[in-house]
Picture 1 (cartoon, helix red, strand yellow):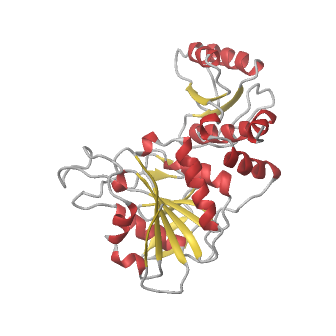
Picture 2 (cartoon, one colour):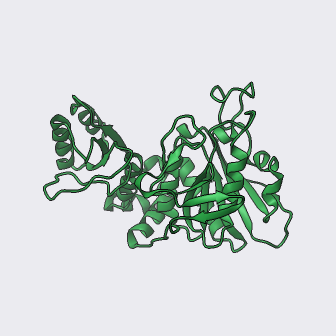
Picture 3 (tube, helix red, strand yellow):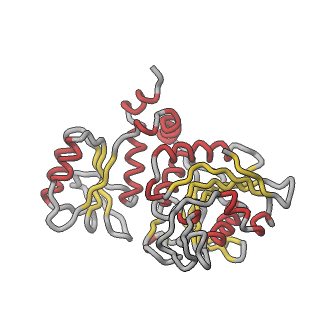
Length: 336
């Protein structure tokens, strides 16, 4: 799996760069084409070799974990990625980790890694909105910035760095389809900015948390095959929404449902009725909001739990991991 090491400063700690594909590794037939490219074509070693100044601050080690378009990100890749992240975090000669990733699902991967790894060292996901073949690609600068954050004293937790901005895994969201600065942290705001190879912080680094539940998540995520992870789906509330999709998913054996509700967790009466029936029949249901900013503020008479501020896609990851921690999931994790 290991590609190569790049070093101009022997003896200093490594930054490990793990490749997973994405637009940052994409190629198009013409340098002017920023849309009609094929993602995940260039290896991470080749990407790093094209940025000579990357090793000015210390040695770099690369590994190709996967080579996928992030719209096709899978539980199996997540499992492999978490295993490699934990492997390198345990090495004393590794200061931090950078992961090259597609923009479409980077927020989900970041949240997943924060939940299962809880790193005390920095794990920095970065990306690009233009392919590697573009006339002016944005990927190389993003990798440089991500490596600078991975080497920054005191940095910790899972982060996303794009267009010179540092985001926390908990609140980062992709909010634009095309612009180079495509991400936001909504009401929470960014953690900081990368300026000429240094970080200027405006918030504290994410704090690594530990609890019995998180320990169970780590154990179960390691031992349960990705193909056996709980099925959790997302449904949306909108004008005229019905319960038909919920009923169909329950009939297919779904174990959890996240609803992207309107406003402060509001639901069409027909959709809400179907979700309550599903919940009564043992399906775990969580309400998030489809609004980009804000969170669902709970009320005493709520009959469906809220996502505690998580976006629908992150609430899905959290619910999936919680279901893995349930007694049924624990039984799956024990051989025999």
